Amino acid sequence: MQWLHPDMFWTLAMIPFAAALFLFAAWRRRLTASRMGSPQLMRRLASGLNLRRRRWKATLVVTAVALLGLSLVGPRFGTKTKEVKREGIDLVIALDVSLSMLAEDVAPNRLERAKFAIKDLLDDLSGDRVGLVTFAGDAFVHSPLTSDYNAVRLFLDVADPSLIPTPGTDFGRAYEMVERAFDAPTGGTAEDGPRTRAAIIVSDGEDHVGDITSIKEQAREAGIILFAAGVGETDGAPIPVSQEGRSRGYKTDRAGNVVTTRLVEPALQDMASDGAYIRISRTAASLDGLLSRINALETSSLASEQFEEYAEKFQWPLALGLLILLVEWMIPERTYRP
Image (cartoon, rainbow, N blue to C red; front, side):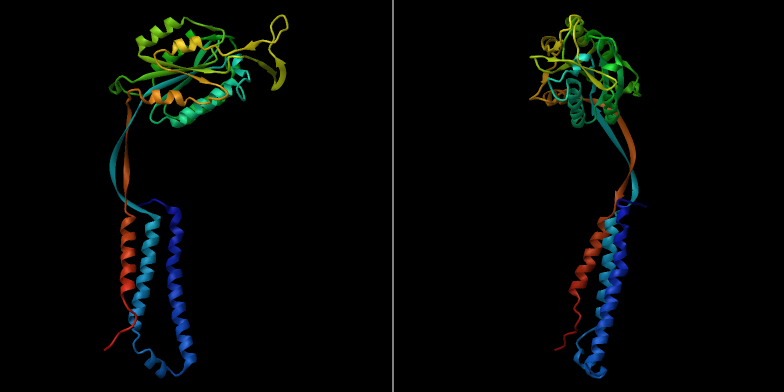
């Protein structure tokens, strides 16, 4: 036997407490009766009172308290095997960690805002497998496909420009790693069958390299639906530079002029023409616009799990306890004689 709420065992302490209350009440009645007069007189005055019924009523109440306490603990016994199938899609998120993503035209900066939006998206997903690719001038698979969203969040937390020292925004290399993430072993079986595959490219789109037309063609051949999210504002912002955790001003060019970075949307919009494009800006800070499109994709069975489930039996002591209280209420203490 198992218990659903073992922390509720303290309620069974009400059993001796209820019994003690009835014993105390009986002692108080006898003490009061002894002070009011002779025992013979008190027996005549209480001739209609049935002491046996009173004891039975007390016993019923204590028994009902025990059963109600037992129902709160939640007894469970009798197991059965249950199979649960998990359905969803495979989704790879490619996050731009180039230096321009540190621009603060969206608070606190583009990279952190993108992380927040991705984490919010993970909160709304259910049953899908998610992988993470980080890219700049190069790219690599940061997290393989997994249904453990907490693991993806941990990988997101450590994603920053120091991971990829190669400058730039190479969409071609990012797409290569997206395909590699889909093709990596994930512990599935050959019987799992084809799965719906989608990818979200999260970037500011600036100084990008890579043939967008070629990327789209490769994605179509591989059955990957591309979505994109542009991060930042089009009016531009400087790029903060820090060293050993201390601010060192802003990035400058060889002439000493402050470099300004802007959100470049056309390439991202073109790449997501088969899916959808959304902008993460000061006024729109989530990927909810993509969520509805992702949820509309055809899902496939990702895995099935079998587990033993205990049958909940709390309703039996609950029902019996309530029935006993009803019976106790219907039993009169006095015997009515014509």
